[in-house]
Length: 99
Image (cartoon, rainbow, N blue to C red; front, side, top):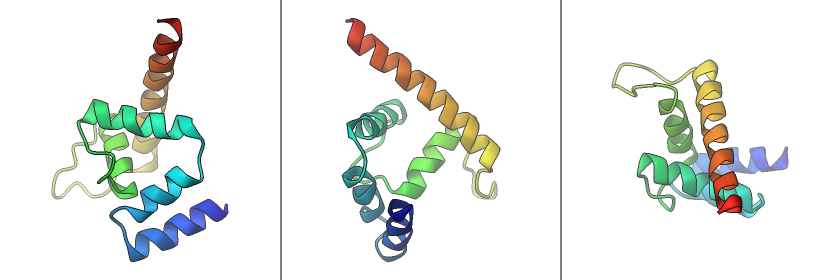
């Protein structure tokens, strides 16, 4: 719970990198691998990605187009994108373990 509050405050003051830094400092290594995997899939730079950009990239995995007047993705789009990302990531980790 404290991590979420720290992230919320950090994003208000420095949205570019602090939110992501807090996420990386308080989480185990698989989250970093997930971030690297998403950045590889979406061709993004993990050092420059904000929390906001992370969730928009997750929503794009479900078909969110991110046009000017689309608004923000809803929770269902985020959830479907997250399940798609997590299943692909599990397959990626399985492939690493099996060779």
